[in-house]
Length: 166
Image (cartoon, rainbow, N blue to C red; front, side):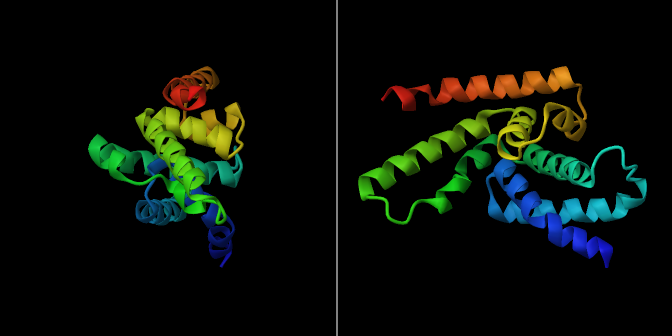
């Protein structure tokens, strides 16, 4: 019963994280389900050194990265940008088209990042984790984590610079 409550409490955040990492709603569902199964199997090994949320994020990120490794680069680029579903309802058509174009380019830029860079960027700027927490989740040193976030931000700036100057 307690694990069910943990699933209910954390499933939305885990889905959001998986969705942002892989860009595919169906895959995100599968990733979250698999992550919770892994957590259930490993719950006895949870040492409380980090919070349960961080531990579960680590399992979800690792599961998502395993999924992404299995996908070809072409199939990852073919998925639609996940944020497109959240368009403003009252946007004018030209504005709507611009928003879609920007979101598609931002999504493509995210998919061009390495899996580690994408995960680090998402955990830092979308999930609000500290560098120390991200380093624990991704099982890397804090300096390597800082570098991954820095590289991701730099690459995103370079790829999205034409959008800012036009």
